[in-house]
Length: 413
Image 1 (cartoon, rainbow, N blue to C red):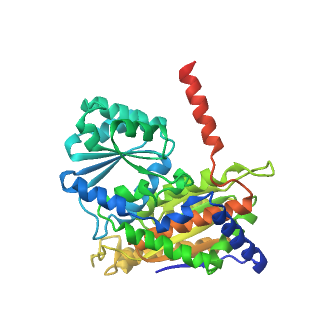
Image 2 (cartoon, rainbow, N blue to C red; image 1 turned 90 degrees about the horizontal axis):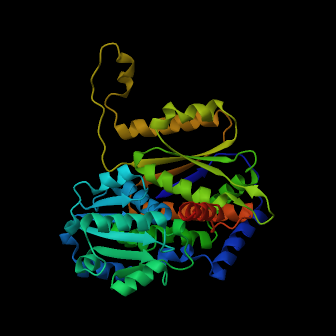
Image 3 (cartoon, rainbow, N blue to C red; image 1 turned 135 degrees about the vertical axis):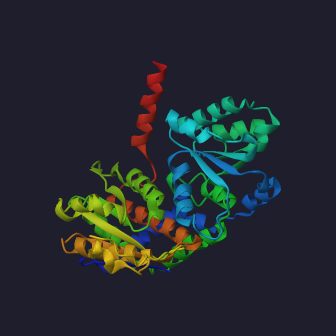
């Protein structure tokens, strides 16, 4: 179960909430935005391929992808890594083109025990193709070899350059729907294939997303609409949105949120005005000792979302030990670490509220596939809602494309 609570005072008009529901319904009806359909994805092909391949012969899954091609998978894997379903297969991410990181990833990697997933929506992502070339060179694998066909899978748009290469070479391909952008693609084969290989129940993952989708389109998610209205209406005064997650499991979810929020909402809007909301991801209790100072005594230009998990897969007790000179810490003895981190969450939230900083809370009963799917769809939907209100094209990224053009010119000149 996931509960949300808004703790900022604001008057919301029913007509504005209703109009927001209508705008999203119109967007779905247009067919131009496909992530809304992903919670009902058919995973038959993914499961059939894995059964036929025989996953027992591999120990590693190497994901060659960056941004939307990797962050969502990392987010969900980190959320669920302590669940009973996680198997012992290692997921290795070839993302950045940092040469030191590439060498570290390849240390001790046995080609014969690894399945390489080459993920690029466009089919020509420079980081991904560069990683692919280096891996082929490192292991001396030719494109025409049986080893290439057996150990590589392409996940891309149909008829992309990568798809055409795969067709020429007889490589297995999975397709990203044409109307699903990369940063919204984790509930497509981009995320579902590696997560299934890692042992997770991807049908339950989709079920969690579907639960929120169905309740939203029954118009039962007014709190979500209110949150989007509050963010968009206060964009000039409160341009910084902080996600303060009280478990280390959310580290990569925070990273995924930062990409989704920044790349979707930082735009020149349809009126020709530069707009945007700046995302910040924090982990409690660690960032209580740093960024919290800025929230408490810095400029009042932030909103904060607290995330709390009630039940941890592992829980341990703080021993009843009294340390000389440190007796003042004895009040926590015999309490569980989960009690401590959640009490810290509550105390931090109250300290932020006392400074008149707008706060909302998302409380998750436990981290499992359904809650992970729900949280992914929650933030995708919140992004779409806020984008509508900011009057931007939520699904393009012209600023990112500009950098790619400049990069190409640097090497061609």
